[in-house]
Length: 449
Image (cartoon, rainbow, N blue to C red; front, top):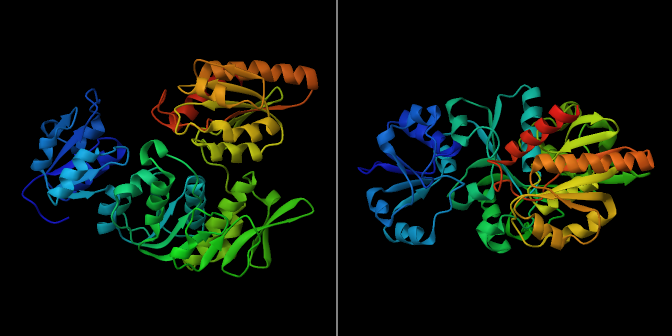
C-alpha cells in the first residue's frame, strides 16, 4: 500500500474489518471505518482499534469515494456497481485483507478453496502439520482473520478462502493452492456459475504448485500447469492420490500403493476420504513426509458443525452438520449415513433448484423437517417423500424430529439418526452457521441428554 494523504477506507466492521483496523493502526496508517448497519454494536474489540469519531454507520453515499484513495473491503460486503464504476474511473484502489496479508506475511502460504470440504481439508492439514512438529496456523475463512497470521513467524500459513474473499483480491503468492471442488453455490451474489468458477480459479494465479481434483469438470485443467492430483477414482501415478474399492471396502491409494483403509480413520463418508486425499496431495507438494502424516490422519476427529456426532441416547443419534450450507454438502452428508435418517433442512435460500435433493432424500430419508425462510419453497420442491413437517424454528424442528424418531423406534425397533444438514445459508435466523449449530446442540443437550 503506497502512501497517501487521504485516509484508508475500511468497508465493513465485522471480524475481518476489525482485523484490518488493527493492522492499519499497528502500521500507523490513517483510516476511517464504514459499516452500512446503522445499529451496529460498537464492541470493546472495535473500540480497541477504532476511535469512535472514525466510524461512519449507515448507507454509503457516492461522495465518500472522493475522500479516499484506498478501500479495504470485507468479504461479507458486496460493493454496488455504481461505486465500483466510480472507483475504477477515478483510478482508486480496492484491496482486501488478503492483499494486505500477501504484502506482509512471513513463511510459506498454502491456499485452499472450494464449494465443499475446504474447512475440513484446512483443519486436517493444520492438525497434521502441527503434529509433525511444524509451526503452522490456519486462518482466513476459518478461525482467525488472515492478518492475524502476520504477527507470528509461522513456517506454514494456511489460508482457507471463500469466493467472497477471492472476488476482489488481486494477488496471493503461495507455495501450493488447491480447489477441493466447484459446484453451484453463492449465485445470489455471483449471479452466474461462470462468474463463480472464474473467481475460484484466482487461487491458482500465483501458486508454485497447483493441485487438481481429477473428477471435477468445473476445474479447468487445460488452463493450468499442474503436477499433483487427487480424486475419488484410482490414482494413475506417484503424484496422485485416490480411492480403490475392494470387497465393498474403500482404500486410499498413493499411486499404486495402498496407504489407508476407511475403517482406520475417524471421519465417515467417501467425501471425507477424498478430503484426506487432497490433504495428502498438499503434504506431498510442499515436500513433507506423507508416510509420517498418516499416523496423525488416523487420529483426526471431525470438526465442529461438520458431521459432528454429539449425542446418542435412547436409540437416537444426533448429528450437527450446520456447515452444510449448499445442496451438494447435504447430499454428501446423506450418502455417508446408513441409518433411518430424519433430516432437518432449511434456512436462507442460495438457489431455487432444491429439486436436486429429491433422489437422495427419496432413497435415504424417513422424514423431513423444514424450517427457516425458505421452508415453503423446500416444501414445494421436495416431492420424493410424503413425511414432511414444517417448524417455526430450530428448537421446534428438533422436537418434531425427536417425536417422529420415537415412532420409528417403537414400530421398527431400530436406531434413528437425526441430522441437521440444512442445505441453506443461516442468515435468516442466525449470525452464522456456527451459531445455528451451537444453538441446535444446546437445545438438544439441555432437553434430551
